[in-house]
Structure formats: structure tokens, C-alpha cells
Length: 226
Image (cartoon, rainbow, N blue to C red; front, top):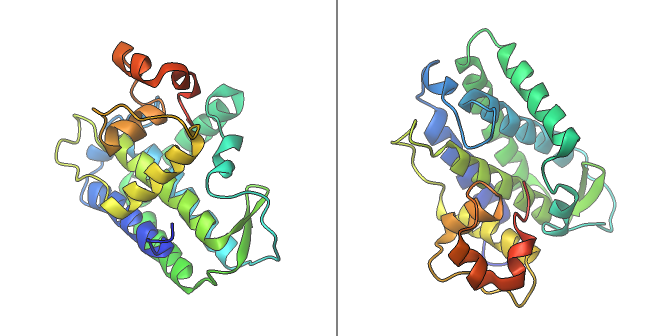
């Protein structure tokens, strides 16, 4: 994270999502994503919740020390299970409550830039609380960036062939997170680019037999998060 200004990476990650959904009509927002059971509108509402959570957290600084960082934070969210299923269903029902899917886009366009401005104004040496944890501000922003980048990749399906990829700063933050979740002696398969790594690390794309051979015992760590 030292080479990247955390709020700049977050801005790029959120701008990337806007670039995908900003001009979609209601039909486009009802296309499927890589997230099982979620349409584009559902996924956008989920990420919108992160932006809203950021506004609350950044406006309510707390005293340190931190009890987790941008990598260990994710070990509390392995993915799957009953809690994840309940959240997925809640998101679907909440998205369906909008009169039109484009209403979610309008709210995203208002909220995401506000979250980025709050991130840019936050004390980089400060602390915030979220999801029951205390994090340093840069680590908190890294968690938001990682989630945004992963969900941006969820939007890149054959149903949206013109969707632009996530920006390089956000991708670098997300890849650094995944690297941190792996054991230190794991060597990533040479054929993987950053997008392959993120999709396989989050279980969006299954490991191939060759992947398992190259990863060896480390294949058992996958998916690193859901």
C-alpha cells in the first residue's frame, strides 16, 4: 500500500464500476453476474452498501489500536454458509424494492463519489470501526477497494461484452490482499494474469488440474475468500 494513495485506488475502483453500470438501461441491469443468484442491480446495491458504510465509518473516527488489517480482515469472511445466503437474499429483495433498477444507479452515482471524497479527507494516521473491527484508515480503504475490484470482475460476463476492466491501481490493491491471504512460500501459476488470480482466489473460476499441480498443497487454501 505504500506506493498507492489509498483513496486514489478506491476512486479508481468505484469509477470503474460506474463505467460499467452508468449507461445500462433497466434490461441491462437485470443481466446475470458471476455472483450466483445476483443480477447487475443486486450486485450494485451490495457495493452501494459498502460506500454507505464508508461514509459512516469515515465520519466516526475512533481511537486505536487496530485489531485487524486489510488482509486479516478477510479471514472473518470466508464466504458461503447460511449467513452469506441470508445476505444474498436480503440484497435481492432490497434491490427489487426499487421502482426501477436504474434507481440504484442514481443512488450509486451520488454515494460513491461522496465516499471517495470522505476517504480523501480522512486522517491517514487515524482509525475507524466497521463490521465489529478497528482498522487503520488506509487498511479500511484497501478492504473497500478489494471488494469493489472483485465485484467489478463479477460484472464482466458475456452478457456485458463491452464492460471495461477495473483500473490498475485497484487491481494492484486486490492482488496484494490475495497474496497476503496465501502462505509466504506459495508461487502463483505462471499462466495466471492478475484477473485470473482474483477470479480463482475468490472462487469465481475453479482451479484446473494444472493449477492444482502447480500450486501443490497451497491449492487447499482456495478459494481465499468468497
